[in-house]
Length: 450
Image (tube, rainbow, N blue to C red; front, side, top):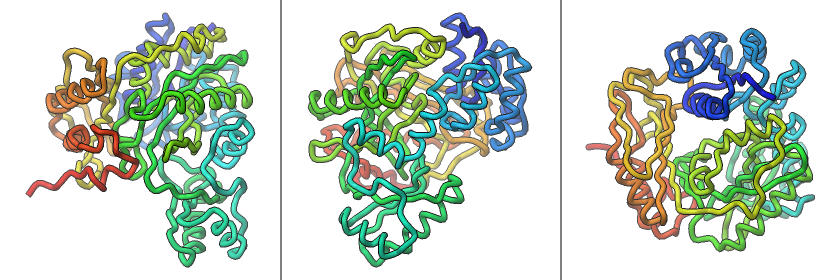
């Protein structure tokens, strides 16, 4: 049985895991960099230990320092949160080798799903529909690359096999631009991901981004916990998410979700995970699997009533899955707005001191954040400072409630993207469901102040 969980993360997600640990009667141990010495997650933990300077490379990405912290504090499990080392197979393997429990899937599964080509092959074997494209890394020969692109059909998307977070991708509209784009993407992939492998997929012009949440135990039991629409993106980064996905037939979602569950059983998945799809013209196409907790997990929690972080911990302790698929009942609609400290027009990060922190409240509003008035938004880490989540019986009510919450929230001292969220919620395309992943920048724009 797990007794003491070290949270290998910071900020909002570290605080979220601490709360789940305490509700399960578990001890929670925090780590922190020198920049986070006074952070909320440090104050709320049962124990806390400094693991290095502000630079993430020397603190939250320092595997050995984190494992030494676990040893010193007597932790018997490590929860990676999201970001940082959460999908690092080498770290997961090191945790287990030190005799600790890794709160996540086995390292070999992280390896497989972290390589987009390996993941695609596993999905094809499981009958999960994939975006048309190559199944192996592109060769070096330019003529062979041209031939493969012609088979896929222009426009194409060149992607890094080990990419993620919207990086390592290039759209190619014309054959004459293909080889240069492939060369640039290959170079970037090698530098950013230490893996130069790239591949080609058909570029889809107007898709939506829909993801399926899964939960699996150690004994081959797996279920899916609804879906989320994450189409509101800028620069391939999610901005607003909602559950369930609107204006898609339930039988289509159930069909692809059942295939995702079958894939989990095939690859030996454990814990929570997310299958991400593009949806266009009535069809789903697999793009990747995230082998960790998602930032947008609260919307699923609200419509299913399942605490996903507690579920991770219970599975890690060896519990048999306590839910059957027939127990999952989606009720109501939840919308999440990621609150970032950034310029709403240019999206440039806005580090500084938060002088006023007054998030919305009232019926149906949840706020997941580590911020307090007087806290600093560090330039060393991600700019997300919180998540506003609205829940209501219907989508129209949820949109109105979220709009009220966005307008009610006051943050001063740093710039935020609250204005962008207001524009999304007022947009006719978003309200009516006639949107795709390119909506922000195409039909949803924040104009600079004159």
